[in-house]
Image (cartoon, rainbow, N blue to C red; front, side, top):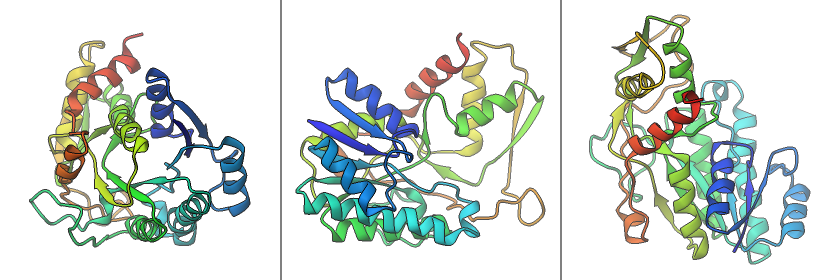
Length: 286
């Protein structure tokens, strides 16, 4: 098996290279400078040059707040670019697995959401990702939704909290956003299994159990104390509304993805605490 990965310089791309190497799977991870998914010629050249058995589209516009005033850019990458990759793969008989997000949901359900649940995004970012899903599925590709991805090296929530905890006595973290943290290495392992026999369907894969952002931050600080004398306290707060501290884009308050379909494919969710401990050790142990 040989994989071509778009967005290869990101968290998931790096994990796919690492986990692929551990499984003796060749992974060609292309950064945007080498593969621009908004360019048909760039996509086709990369596929023809690498001759992959499967393509994983991990390229995305992930700047959630900035997307509110860069709508055209977000849709060009998350919708149009995803479609280009899926169409190019279909024309060459190469299956495509596209990575999507829990931000396609409104976030008001307290029950785990199945793949059949109605998607209703509340941000431009979420809208663009949902549009990309629809285009990929229409082209015969596979879509894997995940949530709250983290990895070593960042940038991401873990690195942000670590940086603040090492320099401040108190940090405030929202308590009214709840989701499922997912270690990029775990998602990479799941994708390597799926890439061996991809199907044209929608699938949820994430870590467990669900926690709030504040609870995740508290766990990060707790684990960091194994390596540094940190006295920082995490204070849970409500998401600011209005003012300079308020986010530009709305976030879904509560999204727990139902992963039964993935479990039936042999990739049950893993506890995110294991991955988090590994990531923090890598960030602070040296």
